[in-house]
Image 1 (spheres, one colour):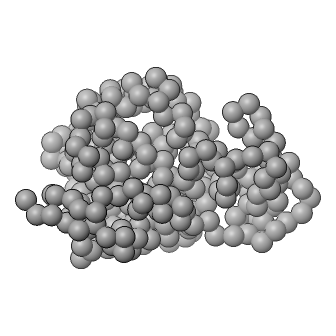
Image 2: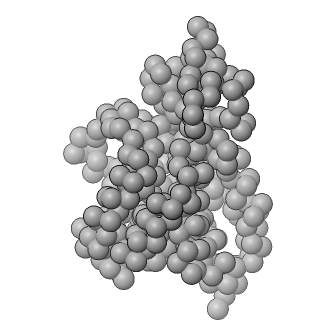
Length: 280
């Protein structure tokens, strides 16, 4: 059984791809962090070894790196995609697989990248694999990815509650999702074990969305009522006001310079906690 040396440089070079994808799509801020957190929780609950939990979590961070090859006009489109645009989006698992094939860590993430849109019934993409033909890591990432998509803001549809998203997971188990993993994930979600991840971009940092144009605004510090934030798209400046478990935005009547949001903190957090060696 070979041993891989997990150096900081190798991890950072791989995670840089994921950070670039996130920086290009403001509407999905925090997605890679949340999916990584969900995959780690689910892998632990499913009895994975510590090394396997790490592999699953890393797969959650980098699963979408193939979107580097998707044009901005499609990746950042505010509405639903046309069929030809969706066909291009569906190429991202294969593009990601090709992109990292010569990376020293490809052996532990390539399956999550290539197979996270496969389905248990064989109706997924890109290879129409089914059941146990799909890597266990990809099956974990698939559930985490779908749950985050349903419970995160998108300009073209409303956010589902945790219970509503769980209903979809239950309905689609055996067809889209691994039934045993789906049951474990739903159990965690309905028990409140994921509430510190849902709607956050990092520990203690809730998502807020611009009132003007919709993109999610990444908070640069733990959320406080005195924080002033700037929309990465239109540049509007807001002050945060506590509102129950979230925040209301007060427009300050001014604009700042729109900034690219790069999730460096999520990367640094993951790298700090990574093992130095891994048997595969």
